[in-house]
Length: 127
Image (cartoon, rainbow, N blue to C red; front, top):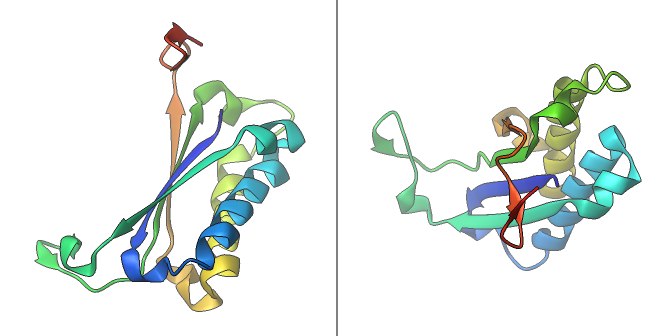
């Protein structure tokens, strides 16, 4: 199951942007992998107060969202989608810019995490 975690400045989450982000990120997975994974995509938006973020060892006022997508490692190596990681980074960045405004594009940080087989579980059972 694709799972997004987005760390973003709390003030950017104003009650109207959350549905846009959730929809756009879900659509990004669907654009690369198709409807089946789109339907399974989960999104968590985590607001960070500005005084709780730092760069280079000092507090920083930044709008840069940090987006992590985690899913099984094998999904990133499907023969039918040989460039999946690059496509995901591009579509996720586009999704964030669409939802938050084009000026954010240069600050979007995307991390793609591959979970090895046997290291995820659902309802207490290894999946």
